[in-house]
Length: 359
Ligand SMILES: Nc1ncnc2c1ncn2[C@@H]1O[C@H](COP(=O)(O)OP(=O)(O)OP(=O)(O)O)[C@@H](O)[C@H]1O
Ligand SMILES: [Mg+2]
Image 1 (cartoon, rainbow, N blue to C red):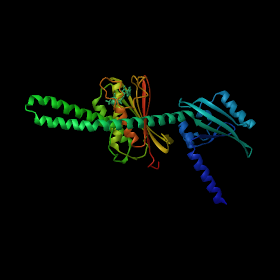
Image 2: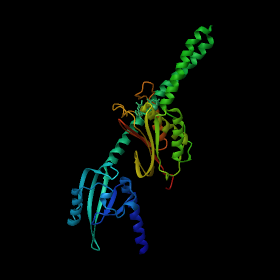
Image 3: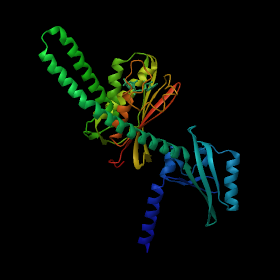
Image 4: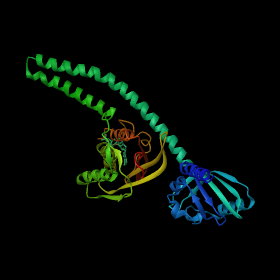
């Protein structure tokens, strides 16, 4: 019998651990009795720290909200609210749907169950799906075009070489060299547009080795007026990835930040881990989040939705390939890059699943 009880408890715990809905159990004084991992994630607080704290210590509770919760406990009538904006104690604002359900009395104690669905998260997932779909469509289009361009280009180059050999004098070689040179340039461009073909050579790495490698590389070449802030989570586990490909992705994003800063400003590297997070369609238990933040002029509004497409650039000397390459390198690791930008703050966020670790 006790074995069955233990098994049921274990199953219930597994369910609570894996729910993507944030769950909070409150007592009559609106003190926290329990939160699940999705809730830890949402409010950036551990269960240990939240336990027995009053609810207003993790989210802003105004008088009306407190009254509604207490009233719900008293009358035992559940209620729901949709698209409510709340503020966490870290001053983040979240749009949520929530349901408050009073639990039947046990040993004269009343409890209130709060189920919270983070709407920004759903919007983000829908946006990511759209981004991934659009990128796949562009990739297929480019692949098709590249194929059509590359074949005749090879013929053109070969013919120019043959012609060069037959030419009576060197003075005409200048022209065949132009054909060969331009064919090579086009070939190069098509290859870059197609993105890296390399199969990742994965090994166990720590993300901070990658970040520090890029920082040292760019710090040597950028102006003294650019300052780096490091906000690393030292507890991040090793994971399996190709360090060279990640270096390239972080480098492309960092170089853009440097160019946006025009000689003066700050770049912040921030690393964190998130539990239970969806990238595209796929749910992951543990995900690495890398933020690369700069306080430059921001991305022009008309560009923001297109920056991950190849050949999209806002710079006179840009080829517009840096971000599309970075995105495809991170996609090769089942991750995703997102961007949020306004004048004075541009954040590129890289999400990478840490599935193969047990942290
Ligand atoms: N941190 C940033 N701040 C402001 N604008 C940015 C930032 N990052 C990217 N951009 C904008 O996005 C555009 C696309 O970037 P991307 O790296 O793909 O191409 P590029 O930098 O123009 O050229 P390339 O990287 O191929 O040399 C940039 O031209 C720039 O206008
Ligand atoms: Mg670039």
